Length: 103
Image 1 (tube, helix red, strand yellow):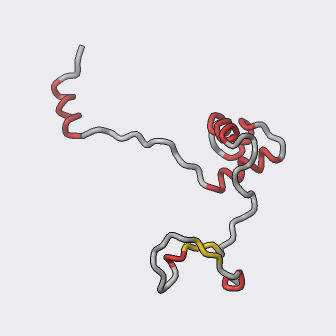
Image 2 (cartoon, rainbow, N blue to C red):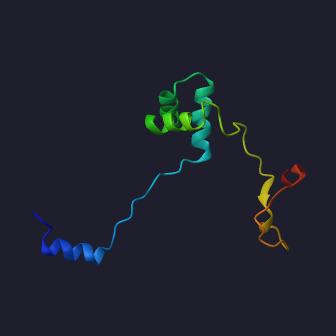
Image 3 (cartoon, rainbow, N blue to C red):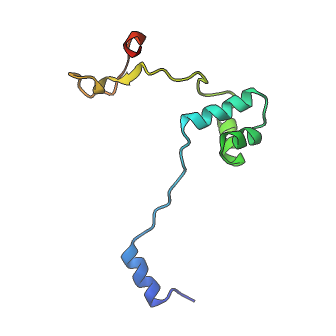
């Protein structure tokens, strides 16, 4: 039993459908996950607290070897890319600016 002629035409017109691939969780989600781990929650419970599936939580825990791979401290606005500063070439290097500039 094969695909009908009309379905073949639709597939030919539509082209190949892409898979969305693995979704990337934001830093805030990962921080919530690791904070729950630090409070003593299991990886499955921490995943629920962070809003991701238990399988994702288990994978993050396993891939990190049980140790948080990120700093749980809030990010500081002093880190910007030097290509965004006037007069600099787009080198992709990171620079640290004095915190007084952001007060």
